[in-house]
Image (tube, rainbow, N blue to C red; front, side, top):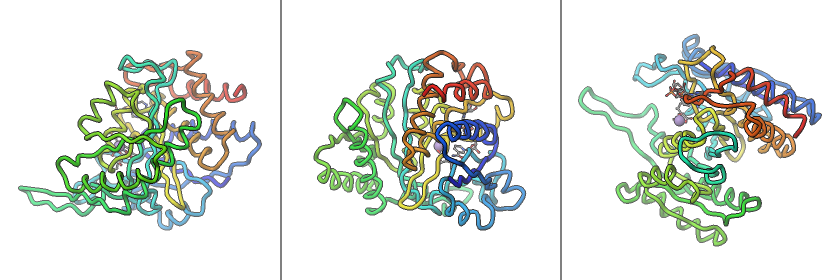
Amino acid sequence: MRLAVIPGDGIGPELVDSALEVLAATSTIEGFPVDVFHEPGGAEHFVRTGEPLGADGLDRLREADAILKGPVGLPHVRRPDGTEGGLLGGVLRRGLDTFANVRPVRLLPGVQGPTRHAPEEIDYVVVRENTEGLYLSRGAGVATPAAASDQLMITREGTRRVVAFAFELARQRARTRREPARVTCVDKSNVLRSYALFRAVFEEAAADYTDVETDFLYADAAAHELVARPGRFDVLVMENFLGDVLSDLGAATAGGLGMCGSANIGAEYAYFEPIHGSAPGIAGQDRANPVSQIVSVAMMLSHLGMDDAAARVQGAVESAFRDGAVTLDDAGSPAAGTRATTRAIVQRLDAE
Ligand code: NAD
Ligand code: IPM
Ligand code: MN
């Protein structure tokens, strides 16, 4: 496997080191070789070069078998228009056309969530449209000192493909879940025409998936239900910005941002990263939770069809929490620190 790695900013490099340690140990046990190359990108790279990604960086990423990305961005590194320089979301998601941002939210046994739910009640996937919605306005907003505007764009084709992805994912999950497959459409179609198109395209697609239950929630009510009754969810699909916000909300119920990894998936390319940012306030202090980056490795292996290796990594994370070898403090950081948490997970890979 030729693996491209973007270490990123803030806690990115330490998280990626942890994830690569887990991957190296897994590759030794499973007997597959991994050839890693580093691709610079992010805010520090932007400060040095004026670009968030190296020249020809996208081409090199396209040639890799897999891409693992750490969080990028530093709040004080800004472009002339006031937005952050060094953020790679737009470059990679649109450049690689990874239209589905897959964000599983699971409360693992042994993790104390802030709501009173049992682990089996928090187990769903947010599928976030990743190439349009409000984010299509990135770099194209209009501002005067008195007013500023951005445009939210929903297209039929952009919605069709991500909704189809969500239905297929629900079917796939139904093979191992006891519950029937269900996809929840989250929007604000009671107020905005763009979201009404999103819902209409969802309803059209639903007709092709009569084996999958459907469910509709306005985004405000969805935020409530994600906290109050998460057990009703299986797969949720929504516009880009809604998915950004609601996936972080979901992460809080699963023990914090540091528990959640993600996959950015397109027809040709995919890359894998934590859902959170570079957490500059805790960078370099051995305090960041590396689980988000490690479960992103599991998602990457699964996407590559390496199911045994993926299950080994995921299983080692889960047994580390089940055994009480890893516990989280109130801020969502591992009590034992980043390094010790990584070791606890690596030690459990053999047993899986
Ligand atoms: P953040 O996700 O970096 O941090 C939010 C809070 O969660 C902070 O308190 C932080 O310490 C904590 N946190 C995050 N990850 C953690 C982990 N693994 N373990 C323990 N605690 C963790 O969000 P922010 O502060 O709003 O943004 C910081 C920077 O990251 C900004 O530049 C932002 O643009 C960028 N960002 C990048 C990505 C990405 O690369 N995909 C995602 C989100 C934010
Ligand atoms: C995420 C991040 C990005 C987003 C930022 C850093 C551009 O918050 O991946 O969730 O909003 O998409
Ligand atoms: Mn986000």
